[in-house]
Amino acid sequence: MESLIKYILESLLCSTVIFLLWIIVVRRVNNFSFHRVFLNCGLVIITVFPLFNFKSHNNYNLTSLLGPAILEENKTSVESEGILKEFSLLNGDGLDWLLYIYLVGIGIFFLLFLKDIIRVVILRAGGIKQEHGTISVISSSKVTAPFSLFNTIYLGKDIIDSQLDGIVDHEAAHIHRGHTYDKLLSAAIISLQWFNPLVLLIAKALVSVHEYQADMDVIKKGILIDRYREIILTSQFGLSPVMSNSLNQSLTLKRFIKMENLEQKKVKAGSIIVVLTAVVVTFFLVSFSPDNSSIKTDELQTTNLSDTTAKKVPFVMVEVKPTFMGGDENTFVKWVASQLIYPAEAKRDSVQGRVILQFTVTESGKVKDVKLARGVNKYLDQEAIRVVSMSPDWKPGMEKGKPVNVVYTFPVIFSLR
Image (cartoon, helix red, strand yellow):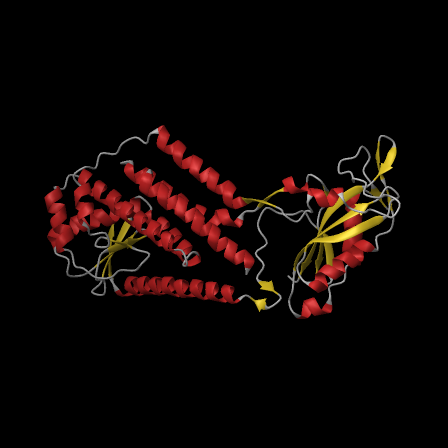
């Protein structure tokens, strides 16, 4: 549940930044193409940025960090840690209740999307089809408002001839600009981010930009603005599929006002710099996080390594690293992975996760002070400590020709996938 909550909170943070940039900076620039690129990229950023997790290992500067040992059911392996977050779906209580709600929300929005798809298929199958160059026009009495999807325009049968050219030109503009792909992207992201009201506002702003661009294209073809407004006002009103472009969907006074000033201005470098800076800062905020699994400085300095080496400060970087069974540190990781046994109690309760341990390889080569830096479950924690504690002796690390104590941080991953 913790991972999902973190994803939701970081998504809300990203969407807040994107929406504020839209209101304060981007929307003030009279350039519809810039608006469209920003809003599309913003939707992707909101969804993708929280998935990344680059660990900042500043907290490990007092320990040597080993690669993780991974136990996957009855199979062991040693893998490198990826940049994507562990999006664990299971914990000690089984599938999270919050995850249930999240998945139900996705399912509802997917069904709404599927309903729109089915409706379009029915309209296409039962309508009268005409070809206008590379664009198909489907006329059907079931169409209550004109819309377009890919290279097809859907019209009602009762549209009068005097309105036809303006409506077709408007929908053709949507097709030529590829607005359908934006709508499909928006539908997918809204399904994944259904909990996020700002995503809906950003998607709504994108639809408005589509309409402004289509209006601009039609007016540039030579139609009089008053005549074009009349066509919009006298078009039949109704509901059209959510993922489609509807001529009536953005019928607002603001849209009519924009028709008076369609001059597109060049985007100033300052606006681009502000947007990019905010996006980069947001990326670092949500994608980089310190790993707090290491012990504190004072703990390292007061560690009682053995009865004969009272309160010696252990080393991290040494001239000659400790070696294990004739190999390097990876040999130890593989050995631990081969000795791990998935606790039956944890497997029964579908418990999995990352246990973080710290231990010291003393100047005599013994593994001492095995302690838990971050735990998951008592059974998994005990198993990780058990195996590391039974480690055979190492060849100690050397500094200036003398053996020294070296502290390690070591993740052990238990997975039921």
